[in-house]
Amino acid sequence: MSVKGFKFSAVEAAVKKPGRLDLGLIFSDVPAVAAGVFTTNKIKAAPVVLGIERIKDGLCQAIVVNSGNANACTGVRGMDDARETSRLVAEGLGIADEAVQVASTGVIGQALPMERLRAAVPKLIEGLGSGSLDGVSRAIMTTDTFAKMETRQCEAAGVPYTIAGIAKGAGMIMPNMATMLAFIVTDAAVEQSWLKKVFSEANDASFNIISVDGDTSTNDTSLILANGMAGNPTIREGTGDAETFRSQLQAVLLSLAQQIVRDGEGATKFVEISIKGAQSVADAKKAAMAVANSSLVKTAFFGQDANWGRILAAVGYSGAEVDADRIELFFDDVQMVRNGVFTGGNAEERGSEVLKRKEFAVTVDLKLGQGEATVYTSDLSYEYVKINADYRT
Image 1 (cartoon, rainbow, N blue to C red):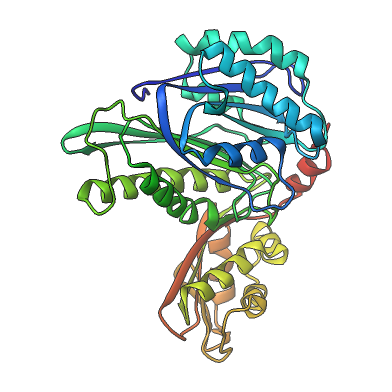
Image 2: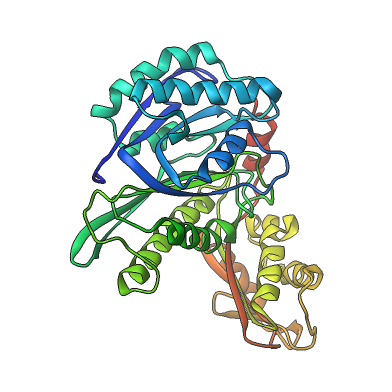
């Protein structure tokens, strides 16, 4: 897979331990218009602080990212290390320091091993001639069990262009955003102010509707670079080409977001939670996220227990308007609740059969209005506890 004007590289820097790719680089031959979305956690890692500062210019030419160390809660040294990493890459590429975005993921509270990064950066830059986006996707993995990639081929005014993206994330996943990194590149020419708007919308419709465990990280970063090398007329808001770009960008991000949920730490289930009939979209999303984040609901999913009462309880405390005498609830097409009470018969048995599937849907109809929302979540298993009990080792 290639995107015109972009080069990629990934090397082993032994950031946390040797034996795996853990330092990646995305480089555009020309400065690209850029937009970013970052964690809402008030404790932000050094690269996030630096990224928020630099994205204001709306331009970027390179992204350097490491796994194994979050460079979070590392004080003045952490900021110095993030800036030095940026400077090393910029000097090696012969570009402006401010044109480099830095990202990190991994263990919180430990200083970056800068001597290893200094040694690895020249190899990283040298590898741009032969590297791939797949390599970068593997270099950003932490507890992920597979690399997450998605691509779309599109046209603007008859000119073909590509949107490609990678992401990482498996635990500490919940909006707004999730504990994840996502990097999207496109060779389309896109007007910067509209790119910022549409990228924010795409994040809301993807990374902000997933949950694995209800935690929000210090390092969440989602970036898009559009370098215009496809040669299309600049895509601007209000045109048919703009709507194509919007829909295909959302498709890329939603696929990546769903891959994150499927790879949830220790997850055995992929669950779609849909709320219908809410008084508003905001109410529907409140209710959906309450169900998706409930530990009791998620452990019931793991146990394949059709415990619909836990779901109604989560809807009830979500803050959404609810009339307990109207609610309906389904596991796939099996109706468990009608007018707020259990449907009886063999619904329990049939519902439990649905929960044995690796993927299923939970639908709750509040019957109060037109508001709807869908979010995606996973179950919580014994393996989740094991992974997070031993994460730092």
